Image (cartoon, rainbow, N blue to C red; front, side, top):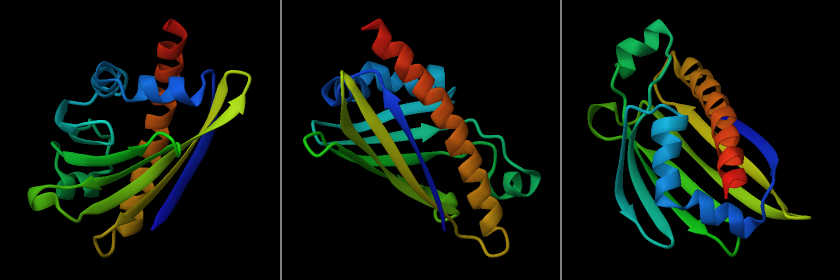
Length: 162
């Protein structure tokens, strides 16, 4: 299992963060425009939980393409505790790809004063195929870090536009 962490100071209050992050239009734009996903579908959304079906565009090493394929998709099952400042999520893989890799994580938002907040992400990834588990985990880490860079830049642009 690989643990991947990072944190950022953002130019908004925790309330402003959650208002934007949980906005359905922002979510669609994040995945489809900023992250360039091939598919995005809302399966469920309410004040405390959300389920999305997502198909990212991945850059995978050759051995993984044969296993994962070129149309990898998953569901993201998430819950939010706005008062506690925590977003908890897990990746659920449908069909024949189930169990190749598992990942889950949290986003924690804390007040940093002066109209700012700190976002702390923690992701756990486990490659579940004997012999290439560490390659899967390293690939997930690379994808997560690239996604964070794009996501945080997108978030900052959107919050500045409000």
